[in-house]
Length: 234
Image 1: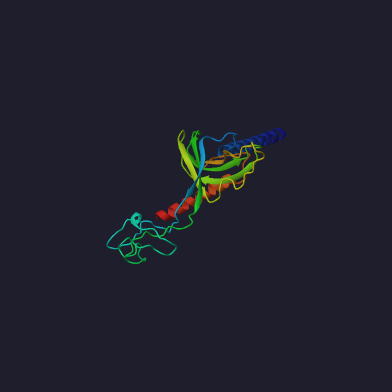
Image 2: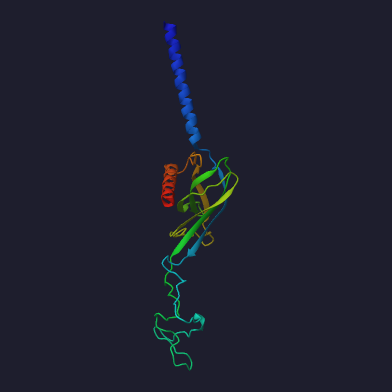
């Protein structure tokens, strides 16, 4: 009887160990925390862009019977006063109306955007669905972090293929950069930091030193985007 109880206890312990091993393997497949991300950064850059407002349409021009070249108009001699054409006796610029031939006024102050780009190659054996990445600016003198911009990019990339991730924001790269000496370099060092990589099979690579919850946020945002796409296609 005692021997039977011992065999039963051993079988139960073995079953529990097998369950724990399966659970551990499943968790390992869901999250990969190797040191290096499964991609290579090929190029990193940012640029400043000035754009027209969305409600400005330069294609809207007056619908009069004639069209005059704006370059042929006589410039004004003072603010709010238009000069007359030589010998014509008529104003060179007409009052805006149904027969006006002037272009719509360009806004005096245009919005400024900063576009951040990262070109990468997928070095994994499966397709990438989305990436959470940071654009860092470091002090060239002491390596201190001057600015960090966080982005989520949803661009499917097959293995050994490259893709360019782009994101825009109104915030400039670095607001203030002070030199520590006359010979100190003032141009910051630019670097990309991959926080999380989401694959199409719903597995992820996670930066073990990255921000907590980034992969979960990346997955949840992808779900919301898919729902929005489905609603627009209906």
